[in-house]
Amino acid sequence: MRTILVVEDEMRIAGLVRDYLERAGFEVVVAGDGEAAVASARGMRPDVVILDLGLPGRDGLDVARELRRTSTVPIVMLTARGDEADRVAGLELGADDYVVKPFSPRELLARIRSVLRRTDQARAGGAEVLRAADVEIDLPRMRVTVGGRVVDLTPTEFQLLATLVREPGRVFTRAQLLDAVHGVAFESYERAVDAHVKNIRRKIEPTPGRPRYLLTVHGVGYRFADA
Ligand code: CA
Image (cartoon, rainbow, N blue to C red; front, top):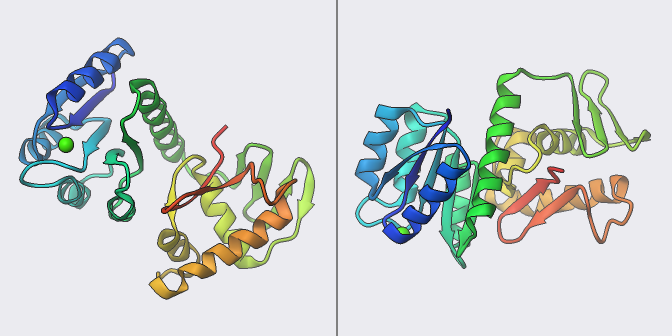
């Protein structure tokens, strides 16, 4: 059975989430503050951590930073609407995804399943051909096809698209995408990512103005469609 650590100080929300996830077949442990969260994560080694960013005392970003020191456990953040800066900071600390409050337990469950699927795929080892939706990326040949049609991409566009397709559904900030492409992130170059994305869309999207593969996550970055 998979175990989920829910870190949330509002007991009404924690209870609701626990009941729903238990009914979905998970074992659930609740921690009401940051200190308890770090201790529980060390002791129980959960498969996923649901982490509210707004916690009394040690806040969620601090907890994420602490967890990432020793663990690669998937982290799904719970964030308040309008907390875009925290969302970006959390993703850059290594959190995997987020859900915006108020959320439905069903939406949270979908995020958890998606994050577990990605973890399982990553553990299964690096495939030399990546596939998501009807986009296929042959890494050794640096060849991209969309619905069987070959698309020519520049090396930077190729790397950027491969990063997104390797983990469909995962949200990447612009800085993370730059980092994946150039090995280093500079704040002032983040707009360069938008330019690359625009070019990739022109090449792979049937309707570049209404993308179905390479999706914008407002205020955060980009994600590749995960269905
Ligand atoms: Ca809270």
